[in-house]
Image: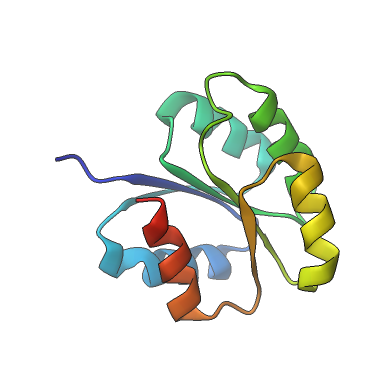
Length: 121
């Protein structure tokens, strides 16, 4: 059985490395994009099983990218989690507006992060 693919769209290289390390025990393939535009392109090319999208990035932000992905019929069913340092209250409304599956707040709780990802793999 092929490994499940998780797309991580995060402009901060340290956070990308951290996420990859957190996900390592789940034995999934992690593909990375450092900006929203590349993330959209990778999602179209690779059709991941899960997308983890940073919200605050230079250029196109994660909310805009999430909305674009959710408008794409071929990609709209892929679970997409927003990654952000904003409070849960601030995120909940925006998550619903953009069609995201949910959110994971920074700093990451490793156990919670793995549990959320595991549900979709």
